Image (cartoon, rainbow, N blue to C red; front, side):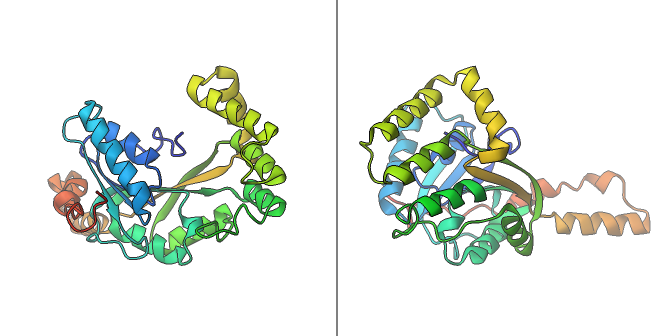
Length: 280
């Protein structure tokens, strides 16, 4: 189940992609299938071992296009072990609400993204999350749980403060919001409750079968009760813009005279963390 819309967030062969706070790796697996060079970063070594095992299984099953590569790395979102501007794309899906120093994490996200690169950031949407918090303390008040509820405007303001240019946004997973409200009402950890089990079976069926009626319902309800909000943001290509502006002033700009900022930015490769940081 993907939260990021890859129609709005294109990833292609050879793109260097960071999945920040990758968790179980759902987005990392998708970009690897698209031929990207992906680094899955998280603090949970147990989850990273499973992610690394899935990467290996995907290669063995020949699901990875030529040139695609992946590694799983242990790291702190507020102090990442990568040089400046080394990723073309960064995904941060459902992670910022867990980090005490969320602005520091967004600053780091912007640092490792190359000029002209794009990030997709997802957090729980305000209204569905507020209802969950009202219904159950156990939903969020646990070690590693949700520390804050973002409004979209707050998230966009913090991304702007980090130096990113905020673009479009959308909501996702509306059909999952009632499931979590139900779980909060009957007991977050009560997986055997009949109502919770019935709704879970419905969601599994929807994910597996993708019936048109459910897709339409999800799309219609997303703006109202989408469980997640997704914001897309770009790092301005400052250096390239400055060169073009100077060229225009002195009359030497001829279609950027062959200058390709997106290619020149590719000179810095991401550190390969398999040795020092990889989760075996």
